[in-house]
Length: 374
Image (cartoon, rainbow, N blue to C red; front, side, top):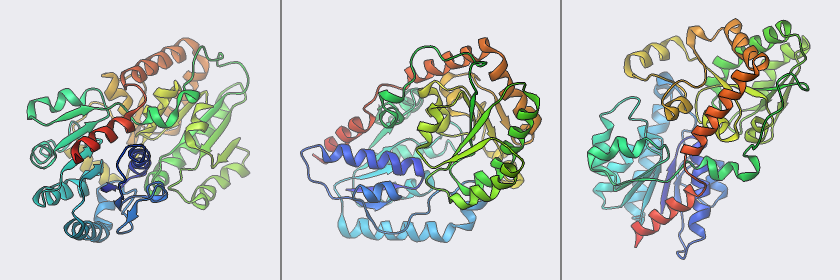
């Protein structure tokens, strides 16, 4: 069986899927592309994957690496003719591989749909032509694809598997004024994101500590895809100035679960927060060129996945020029000073969690994979 994942989240979900497949009756072997989690799960890597690329200009910089990975997988598909190829997100590479697999008469299961509902809707035709089954993880996606005659299964969100019942927060949270609130700073999992977003988060933290009349503490989890040295180099000047910030290497989800609220880059973390019931503020910045390109190509009402699932803006979004320290500090301050607003946001997030389906996404995808190989 061939599995292709090109992002940190896809690597994690792919590893969970292999674990679920190993619990079935078939003794599969696995090859393809992935990250450290998939490799530890037994995936034979055919080429070092071009992981964690963000923005149009980064794609251009790494185009040769992506092309080389494509060629290696293409060659492996021709030689090994797997019973199934499972493509996880990462559409720039995976939709091309779907076409190759289709031409080789290899069944194609696409797990975690490309965000065609946000941009590049022409990809729907490619999916309809080359993908045999599509396993989607957001509740509105099944209806979105239904007019196209694609075999779509809503399998629930795999984050509900990874977080587990022990991390799902229940009951009332303490009032914001009790204790010393812990505020999470999560600037993303890709180096380019962190370089653009972390400085403004740190400046915001400095401003908040000056303006709030209560002690606060900040926590900054280091994603597994990042070099700790890069983060330490960026926060050291702020530590020397007395900013109460702690760098942690533990699971970022555990760190997020401990937070009163968090300031996060857009992405999967917004859904993690919903599952954990942790109010958040989205901050996102990219290079001016990437932002200019995105404005002309992407037509979306929200940048945060959690707002997409909710169907309205339930959490604040400060994007590009809006992402200024004073605005971020003011939005964070409201979580600390307005208990009614804080509780309202948390309740909205928990409603989003309830719409994501129950735990068991990996097992459901594994069941589909077994059906397609029999």
